[in-house]
Amino acid sequence: MILSKPFILDPRVFPEAKSLVRKGHKITVIVWDRHKRYEPEETVDGIKIVRIHNNFAVDALHSDIFRNPFWWGKAHEKGLELYETDFKFDVVHCHDLDTLVAGVRLKKKLGIKLVYDAHEIFGYMIDRYLPEFISNYSLRLEKKLLKKVDIIITVNKNYRDYFASISDKPIEIVMLCKDLINKRYRPTNNKVFTICYFGVFNSTRMFPNIINILGEVKDIKFLVAGQKESLFDAVKARCEKFKNIEFLGTVPLDKIIHYTKKSDAVLCMIKPTDKNAKITMANKQFEAMVCGRALIASKDTYIGEMTEELNCGIVEEFSKKGVIRAVKKLRDNPKLCRELGRNGLKAAIDKYNWAEQEKILIKAYKKLMKE
Image (cartoon, rainbow, N blue to C red; front, side, top):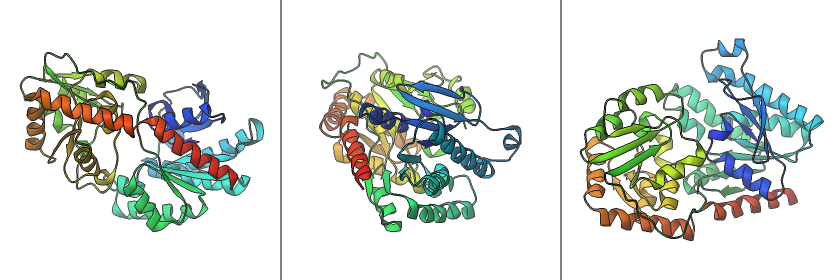
């Protein structure tokens, strides 16, 4: 596998790798550790992680747009080294567009299978903060590289439809579902209505403004955690201004469910005018469901549509008034909050759990290896 961010922080790659290891595969993940926060090599749950660090010259470049060619070259080089000295892998599994160039090069050199795991529509995602000509170039590059791919794995039907419109490659949907923790609904015993958010901090998720919004709502508690990137410091500073908000820093992946269970509701407001956010999935959705917790989602998004379909949360407009309405509705109606949580848990038990998604992933790999 090739991944351009810390492996132990990625909620999709880790479960996929662990599932493949459980089924007898040997997995090595080449990771771009830009900030040199981790050791060059380690093994986690039977998965070997090999990290590539920036040198001084690469660090001096203005952004990852200019650093990517270095990363692609180093990932390709490390892949060849592993193949020649460690094990002759059969598949290179690329996570998102910023790894696919290296994957295509490895396939061309070694004649192996190539999996493209699209967590996002990359060109839509970077359109938030980069010039339009760069996002358009990314879309064209992806379409070109897909010709070399053997199979596409993506996260929902919206993404499947998009990739089907630009490629004739087989596509499988593997959702971001979580392991079931129990099959019996267990309510919280919180004295104060508690909402949680553990994820990325950016404007498409209403950060950092959401801190001020919920900080002023009476009789609630808001638990917040995120990765040490982007708005981390700004969010932390704002949280410190409000007594009803607890900033937890960065919560390890294996602790997120623990904290989610302690909450009464999970915040998942996503900006509907953002091209990628509008059609994406979110970890928050499935974390809430396996914990039996009501979701607070935004209208005119795929997450909102799914929440309404499963009747597992409150769907409101992406605005200060919308968030406050949703929070107060759940805070003031504990019976409704519990009912929505139960509905989410039932859906997780019936369909939306990792065991079901693992079957799809393993089946896709078996089919790939037979071709």
